[in-house]
Length: 162
Image (tube, rainbow, N blue to C red; front, side, top):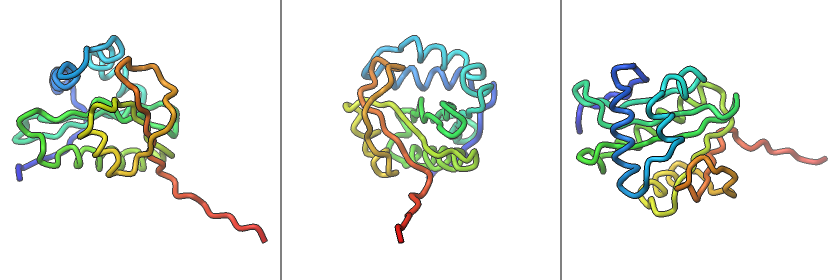
């Protein structure tokens, strides 16, 4: 495949973070106010709060992105994952997902949450593949969001009564 690298946020990628996400969101939905704030002010809304934004680069060109937004000290929201249309279907989202899970584990997070829409079948297949489980939706952060999923990063502890 391509000479692909996953790198953390840098200011020079801010406009790409906005542009790539605007494209995927507007394929099926409308850009919402919560999107605009995160996309136009990624340092203030994500980085400065202890989160991270990753970019997949080919030849130093960002072609995909994803954000890990802190919800609590031990919970991160996976958000704003998208791959440029001409690079979709090459496993790039898998590499971004691997990086996000590693990031969360390094931060000693207990879980990763995400809000999605049931019409996004390819995204849902990715989340299912990685072990995310659907839970009751308790968020109105995104009007388009009708599904909440959680990935538990802590192995269940077995207790035995004697």
